[in-house]
Image 1 (cartoon, rainbow, N blue to C red):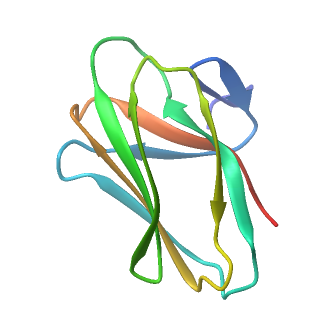
Image 2: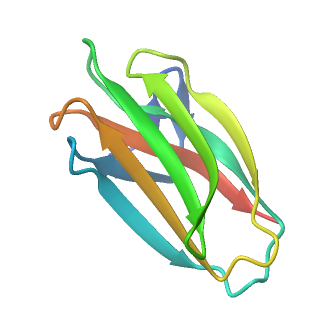
Length: 110
């Protein structure tokens, strides 16, 4: 992570999960062990400009919990997802551009 955090469009976060992937996508897997109820944070494009889209999918124990589609130039989108009882959480990003980096910043689990 660069000094000063990671900027997702209009917001800077001390910590962020970065995902890069074209049509094949990128996936990050997390073991929640059923200990949390809510996942929240902000998603969006990290840097650059141009036309690109991505679909973020949040999958808990093999079941799609939420899907978000956004443009690379959209403002950072606040999200909140019910993860009650989820053991394994996967975060998928499938983008129309393999040169764009997408981020999930300021993530909190409660």
